[in-house]
Length: 316
Length: 316
Image 1 (cartoon, rainbow over the protein chains, first blue to last red):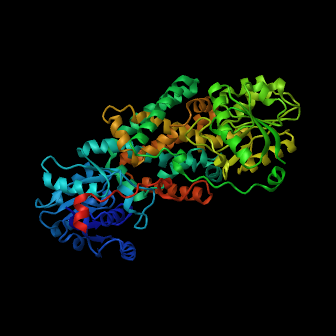
Image 2: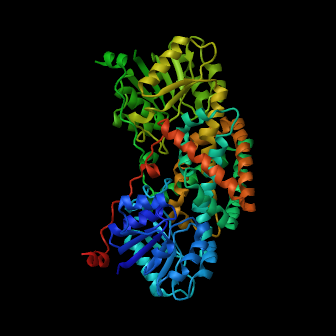
Image 3: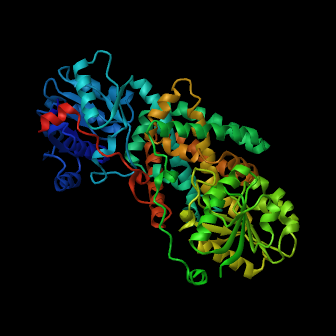
């Protein structure tokens, strides 16, 4: 059954996408939203994507059956403490954070035993932020990972899973610790590497920023999309998932050293073998429907320019 | 004026795109093509993208005004030696290699003084390979870098620049050495990093390949596109541009160490400052028309799934 009253705390890319999707797919009868930023609250009213926009977190969660915190993971503990006295007994409290173990540690101690705390992470997003960036289809065919405690109420887990299913997501359950390890490699490490390389390219003495931008179509520009992601969200992710990120960084550094050595020694076979293997992994992601087959991500290539005069004339 | 007879040696992604573009935009009156692979030659005949398909490099270049080698950089020297006796005096000989200094070193000694050797690199591509992967618009609004020797004939340089301009490219000239440094950061280092991280993710004990593929939408899948690029081409690039790649790797490693230290120490300010700066660089690339503004590269997001039954029923 649909949620009667859904409270969304935070209306950025994810929160505003949940609001749009919950309405589009009938997953909630009433949506109440809040944001700590008055500008965002005003914008959400203009966009009309929530039934009610209220000024405080306390007001948002009152009478809500499902409360979802859609805020940077570093703020989850504080907000949990703030909303705790206002939660309806039996309510489900969840979040959308990209790190789970630290969110559990930060939130759980504040929440009353009469509510069901089921952490969640929809593995979906874009590089854009804010309430205008959201859209209803963001979660369709993407995975949403739930990390309920072993003693969590199965009915509450089922309700939350059904909610995400209604938004189009595939739902999977795992422990917070395993989630953090999986996401460290599929998301956190790629972001860290992208941020690093874009920063490196911007600080070279011998190659100007203008050259980097002009010739970015050779590969660099793909990294800049990821490195354009929300700075606050990602600062919090790296601080909150420190151990798993450092572990994956260790593995990455070992592999990079091996490749560096292969280049230095002119060992083409090692390079060729890896490059052949990685091509197969791309295939697997496309086969699973997690990306599209279209070359260059299906980026629109410009329509042919009009024929330059001398050539057009000669051809006629 | 259009080239009278264009010879393309190699008909992969780039060669076949040049063939299509040269015809679409009237940049050559006649296109003769060859490939060392009989299967590719047959396919090019089927595709009908060249006026003539011949069996040998020697036959391809005879009587050609413009000869372009569209082959991995590691093969350019051998092919230059092979075609040298068959080149028409006054012909322009060029290539499309992603490395320039080594190509000059490999090719120049073989070429007769009666031809004009003007190396070139169109900074454009996709992750797909082969004659079916090409398309006429590949070079539109992308940069093509020419690296003529200081004593190159200005008229020949102008002719080649006009050819690439006719295909829709913006043309820039620089030294081979500077080219190799610029591309090391905008293209070669990003590819090396992408290949590495995709390989790392595939060899973790604690996270399965299936999990990596399923949850790749968090960022990883963007790296897999780049890591799906042609293995032979890229092996050759890293071997041929060793010094510049190792230099850029050094800078990258220093920056990655700094970020690693920031994460270990919980230094959020350092992370936040970098993440804010890199967002601006993305903006610059979009403003220059080298990528699109659409979120997620404009990947099509799936149409909304039909409403799950219980929700649809309740909503009515």
